[in-house]
Length: 354
Image (cartoon, rainbow, N blue to C red; front, side):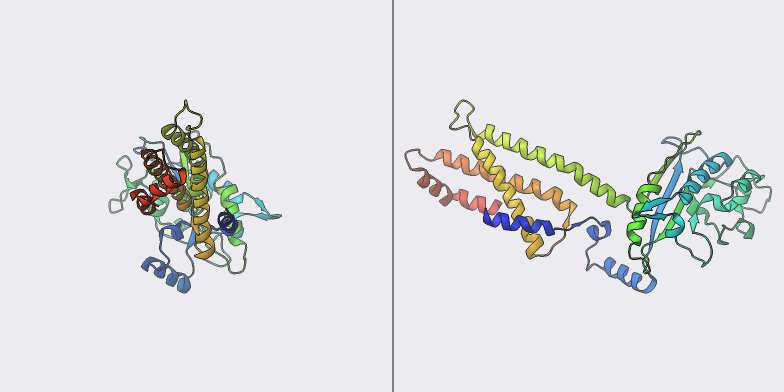
């Protein structure tokens, strides 16, 4: 009990690692070293926030390069760009967080609307938007004077057989099944120590929380830099309930499988209860040693797997010890029976399984 209490107190120092890159890439691997070299020489990569507009499943044959659909995309894009979020008394917008490739210019936003410089009026007066998309010259640069990369802002590109290019030497006009808007944020800002917290707050309250309603049936999928991390956290919290229920079910299973319901003395509810308690103590000691002695960071995968693993081993040992104890003669004292039970193969089996 004392050892368990001491180990459990160290759990308060436990840090849960939920960074996907640190979860799946060993720190001494080649990929990690290359990433470190890149960050040191070229700076960290971006926080990528992406919107993907498309029709529901089964509608991939629909062309999304139309003026009404582009106007719907522009409405959501402009709302996100202008939305204000209050973080610790500060009003934050995308303008405070975004990546600016050219000093003094605007944010870098990769969007189909950049062909019309994010101006819905220019889109409405365009006589042929398909031909505009084919152009790579200055009039079709984005609002910062940068070229728009077609494969970045459109998904499922193909040739539009229903639309012909009047220039016989020109490229075929495109069609697409998805419209893509990408906001680029720096991964960190040396001049702002709270940049990461501000960026995460903006992602949660603006980018992932802005509603989108399309009269044409267009749907939007959102992928923020924090999306994978959030999904892992949500899954872990959901699995906590499963762990609690599993321990309760195992308690009943041990009591009913090993005991006799008609005999209160041999019902073995106490065995099931204390067996589960010892399993919990073992888990606490294991986490305590990992955190305090080995200075390991606990991952959410560990929190999901270890409780089930220790529970399975503990229940298995309870069945082995109980069945061996029942085979011994009852004429011997309890202490002698317990000693014989452990002296035989059960003790070694329990040690190996544990």
